[in-house]
Length: 413
Image (cartoon, rainbow, N blue to C red):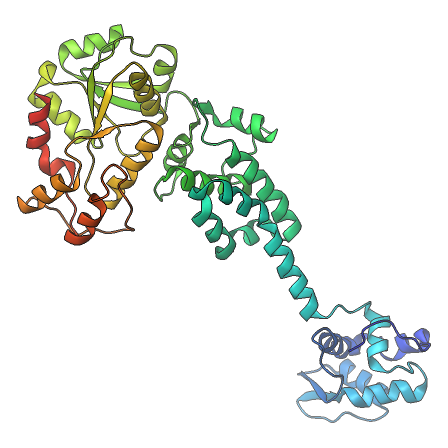
């Protein structure tokens, strides 16, 4: 259908007196909608519960009463004929609608163009995923879940938003811990660009989680830890790591002499890291293991560091420091999918060896009858032992650190 403006002259003054009547606005709107959809301007259109003014306007247009039923019905082909016959619009109703309401863009091509624009919007994220395969699944999810459309509204706004997301993610994770506002100022030119609740922060944080493997969650504390997984900190005091009998500062030495756990903040580790090093250090996931070691062995316990779940920025700074000083790290975590993910995140940041954390250890625990509830969640791999993930999938039960405390404590004596 040709939707270009009329080539034959239109008597606009008479047209606006006749078809521009407010009582016929509904009729013009229906005709325009049909033009946008590529439908012919023929057949009836109806208006339910019309006002007397709308009935009177239709009667003036048609030159007769449109009827007294509960609805008002007008045939578009009849209106077209009236306009042509009167000379008001020799090209008929379509030309008249364009004069009254402006050029008509068919919805089919317009929607196709918009969808093409949306597809092109994601090119910058696709390029980022090509460079870092860890972001591939995240990029696919962004394209399909509608989040970008809801946050940005238009393809142009989305393109600008995703370009800034890509700028931020290209600079992550940072080599050394950095405050979130300082990073935002350096990478994006605005210290508040990654403030909570902004579309840029929402999308960038989802990309951070894809980069680091940080688990799902909600709330301010979860967001703080998720940023910290890429080395971005809200402050230097909220990121901590739990230790037992680790020496190297006056405070640590005093706590080790008492056989009591110590909490180190990122601020302390950044300004005064432990000067001493140990040949071998064991790491655990859950505070219950460290607490039991302090209760059972006290100052005789071998040095132990607890991640308390996902490795914090403080934990990563400490473990990198010790690794660079020659310490060999040995890690144990929960035998479940979440435990494997935490261990994999740690392995991407610092090398470690398994501490009773292999497929053989898992099978021994299950055979000993100390398995926990059924596994839940999405399976994942265990790079340190390719047989561990299949073993979990086969036996299908969790083995938490707390259930094998006696075995772990025997290694710390």
